[in-house]
Length: 415
Image 1 (cartoon, rainbow, N blue to C red):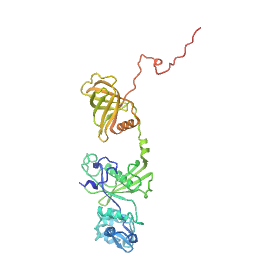
Image 2 (tube, rainbow, N blue to C red):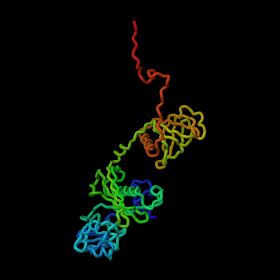
Image 3 (cartoon, rainbow, N blue to C red):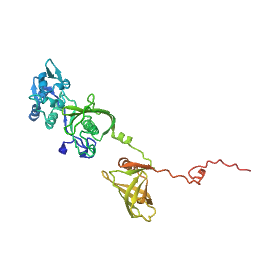
């Protein structure tokens, strides 16, 4: 198992527990080369200059990443068994008559790992070194910047969700969740928005899985903006996550979304529940319920159903005679929120299939408590049924109801 501090923070990827974080060892992609003049003009202190010199070597008027050859003979490729890599090398090397010349500023770590098979280029930088180099280069004027982030997938095959069924490969659903987490981490580092200032609403998700992702080997994830670097505080999200295993692309996922400021997001998610709808409690809310009446009496039971207008609980024994009026408060405990108290207007006891049922009618809730209770129903419950409206008495004509004006015509008064 890895050290937990190597994982990305759970808040950054919108998770509540460290166990749910699936990415670690975050690092930036380093430029394959940069003009030597940038370092010469930067007046770096000796420690920072040593970090750069440990990672780059002088090659004419530029500095080249020490793990990358500037020139590769085609015969060298063949001898190392890398001839099949020529098409992807042409994305960053230019082909001459019998050799390749490094021209691209950005070379993928997967290509870098393959080129380590060439004689003299197996000294690849580790994660700590890459972070140190990036911290020096990011503040230098004129230094190439692309905003690409690498992560390593934390593939815990005992994960309760993704590996409930035994798999010999990483499930595609897990890769999609890893992509989402990596994109959130990338967004908060490069967008200009602070955590908690906005939410991202996913509009579209496109995925491709050219190969199975094996469970037995490391998987690295490269995430960045899809087409070009997004402008600071942009309102649209278009990101791409590419997964590499043993130098090969195994998955490619694109996420498109919109940035929504939190006050707007909360208004959009402000669901109104019909008081006739009843819900069953799920995980996150304790089933033990305590009622304190104004008379000083206490009642306890197990939570059965909830609605915006009331609660239903089961009691092991009869409640007995209740004082009138039966006003008071009911107390429930939410695992991540603590105790919540709701005002009770009345109680009604009845027989149930497993004992006695106690139905609580809530008093009017103020705006803040009403919002809080609505969030409880939204997050901790699942719909059970809708209670039908009480029917009118069959023997009572419609025109005799007290809340409706009489539809009968006025009778003529005879003289």
